Length: 90
Image 1 (spheres, rainbow, N blue to C red):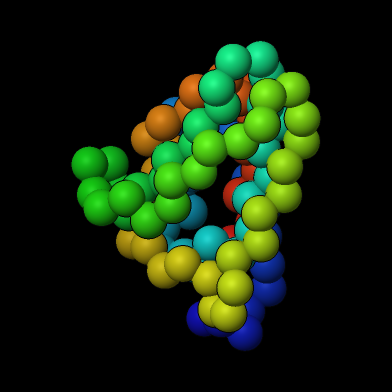
Image 2: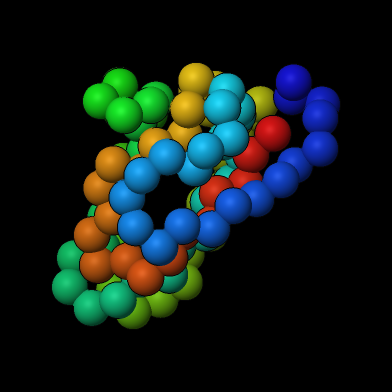
């Protein structure tokens, strides 16, 4: 699956990206004031696969190395002081 087309989906709150099994390739996060944090798990209640803190009031781009992070479902479980997250996956 690592050689397939990259797609993206934007979320503005916690929840499933709704794309089924995928590899997370990149994320972009728009943060607000406070202490921005984004946590992604392998499905609702699954293992944490990505947990990041960001600087406030900025746009951040995080590239995932190699073939990305493989999950059964991309689930945004914590979305603190963030306006939106765009997940790039394949």
